[in-house]
Length: 254
Image (cartoon, rainbow, N blue to C red; front, side):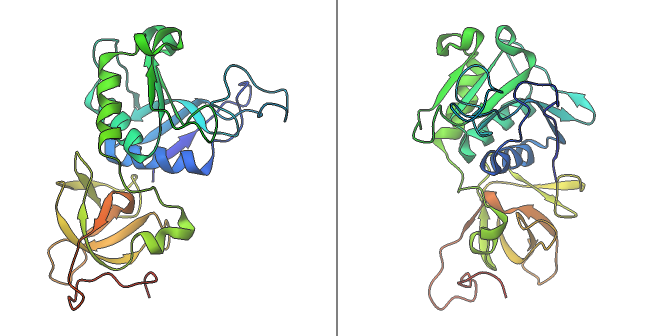
């Protein structure tokens, strides 16, 4: 699975991120093949609940993070004019998974740090990007385009471990990740991948991982043999008739 580091103990926003945000970031990291999410600024005390806080309410209770994406030990960087494919895929997948506040820009937090999170409150669902000065008008065009692509094609809700069985019951599914979904040798992004399953690829979910319920073991060839693991948040059930053997079993896996 993706490794998370930070936030630093001496940061003002040094509290953990929320479980909801972590699931969004895990889904985005899997889609973009990010090895490590380095959180430089995490959660903070909510207004009226403590004094360790700064700036807006977006970081309250861990609902936002300022972070860096690391691949192969190298931190990905960007300019105001362009960003590498890994950053673009990460932003699109984060937006698709539910993040509705995303900021980046050399004049905002430098050339490697991105803000990803939710609204200023739990009732704020406005979809916003911003750049230098925290202004929407200064958001880099690549950031606007990548986020808009995710918001236009939202993924199914990311799954909590307790709900994983319902979200990925045994049955026939199709890949819905825009840039494809990596088939891995084990339940996590730390396992190698030599195959990317294209969007629309159909497969059979055989069982949920007992190590990390967000991952499922699949049969891609349809021959009853196991081919590897995929991240379940980027699968959608394939419609089938009531008498089809491929119909998903209700109530999770047995």
